[in-house]
Length: 410
Image (cartoon, rainbow, N blue to C red; front, side, top):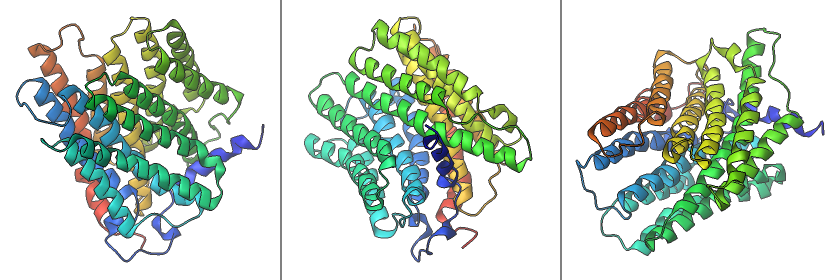
């Protein structure tokens, strides 16, 4: 049981290694590494799609999308925005996990265009529904195939859990499209996708957060360190898996509610053991603990929703707006700085990005659930959406020039 925990160290180069590790790329810098086009694309899409959803909810526009407005919003956040972030992270981390060359050039361009085609065809009126669904689902299927190919080629079977989760996520996308095209409820596919997100946050967040916190404390010559991986961490992760599985099968059952609450308590204790507050002097590190804290709170909120103590939509947004929003931007900012040869330090604009995404999440989670559709509720949701999506727009404006230009250490 002592060898496995040491693997947490592999997380450090995942988003910190610079581009000079591998041979230089002679093509456009934007397509030299996966994080560049996908982080930029995800940020721009989030900055556009969320305000569009608020305009739809307010009745200001009546779009003719492939799916009804609610399903379009959920689909495009779960299977449009998030897969781009996943692809940017995984394609950048994979060379450090496997020692193989990064996906770049023509193939990376093709992957990015496939993702973009899915966003366009789902948001356009009049496409052949089956064709639109095929184009939409093709990206995650291809991403899963790439992950498994790299794992097999490098014989890094210890990375199989990531391959499994991306494969399940691709399956949830397929199920969503099939159900939506038949006019059936997509709740099952939504819960499956959200469950995968919880597990990804638990696995990946549980690696990078203590690793980067330890790195920062070492740089500051502090004697304090995050607690080492132990059986308690394994139990915390197992509880999340059990809760997610129970939720998929019976979302309003007492079993799912109780498991979520136990998992939430365990993961709050887990993140507290990493001593993230000691990184208050570097928001780039502190934000990871905040993001994992949101994840733990989302477990408690989903448990409360299972017992009808918390509105289900609000509980889900603790996960999506809070945990996913803060954790994705924490990783996107750090990766963009580290991989382009810049100091891993959050400047003022990065701090504003972090404040905006957390403010938007807090406002969305606190939004009244009893008067949905009223003018006051729409105004509240509009402010929350502007803050949350504004964080991604600001990321695109501040970090976009870094992503489209050569790395400083080339």
